[in-house]
Amino acid sequence: MNRLRKFLILLLAVGLSTCAWAASADANGVAQASLPLVWSQSDRANQSLIAAPGLPRMAPELALQTFQQRAARQLSDPVSYSANTVVQAELPDTAQRGEFQLHRRFIAPKTLLFTPVRFVGDNFVKSNIIARLLQAEVDHVNKGEGTRTAINDANYKFSYKGTDEIEGGAVHVFHVKPRARRAGLFKGRIYLDASTGSLRRAEGSFVKTQSFFVKKVDFVQDYADIDGYTLPVHTRSLAKTRVVGRAVVEIATDAYDLNTSASAEMQNSGGSQ
Image: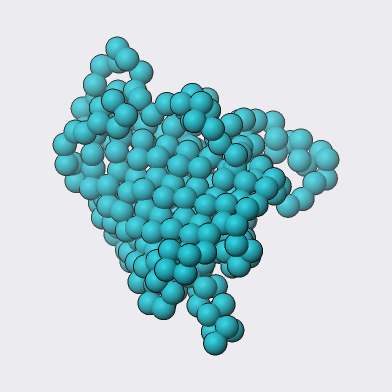
């Protein structure tokens, strides 16, 4: 029975990994590992999601066009960076949970390194949920699959739903519907800054999970503009499974340090993942 349970948890982790990398890496067009940090409220406040005051409001069509152009640029010219990340995972129905703090370093275009800082909680959650999510992030980065799940006209249909606010900033809301039923694509909404066209939030349900045992994965992911790039700062996902119940994963990332020379540094030092 224990072997069966561990196997089902493994399948759950694989299913959750869809959420872990799809929205974070591909919505930005940046192939990155947005999982695995130590964050503070003050740091997060510095990565404000509020639009800059005084800027004129874009028409919805212009905001969408600006967002897609920016995402395409990030996909073709990804930036290297280091960051702090914290991953919190919980299985509410079995009262198991864990929190993993890590330092992450992405070296464009396809190298991900992360260093554990501190873990507290259930080792079963660490090994069978969080560690496997991190490995899925690494694998996704290595394969360079950003174009298959990027939020663009090739992968999605867009319909305008009006305006809203996120932390006091006006946003244009678009419903997104994938053109194919493929892992990493989701049905839901994106929220674009009405003044800049930058992505502020993506939310919805993935149209296909990686495992039969994972029935559904819902997520909400927030973004911030950092040195000209749009990067994820917080993700919350809820998976509903057929056997082990619910699984909740939260990922917070801050202290981004963008470094466009990191790739050359890595090559010169002969380092590897």
